Length: 186
Picture 1 (tube, rainbow, N blue to C red):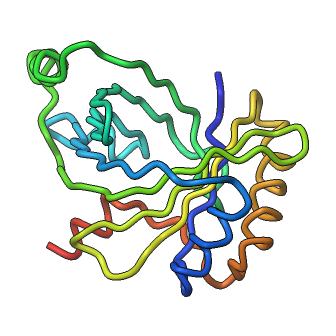
Picture 2: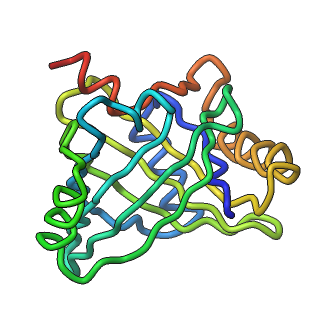
């Protein structure tokens, strides 16, 4: 079971962070994520701090869809969760399967992203600059993977160090979920 070791922060200087990422790691990949989060009629997944999502990603040369299940947080500060994800061939059929199993769309929204593949030390990271049209500001998500909960502190320390190198301050970190922020904005 892989754990997504991720930290998210508000970006005070989006242009400066993007410039640093571009100079250091090359051009980012612009993508638009169309996310649909599912839950049971009674909200059992959300109540258990779990997520079930279908994400369709549109880029300049590709459209792909992934099905993701995230278990409950294993680290409250970062919000890191065990994650299982797979690509699906047909987005409409994947949505139909989840609805057929009794899940209903809980919330849908769009994320406008610029993704960077980052190699630092022995780790690979995904750095994503994010804008959600319904929310104010720009966010950065930086993630790597930890194979076990015992490895999570080391992985998160590497994430935090890289974010510090990008000029992200501790007070800018947030564990608020986009789903909660978008729901509150609506």
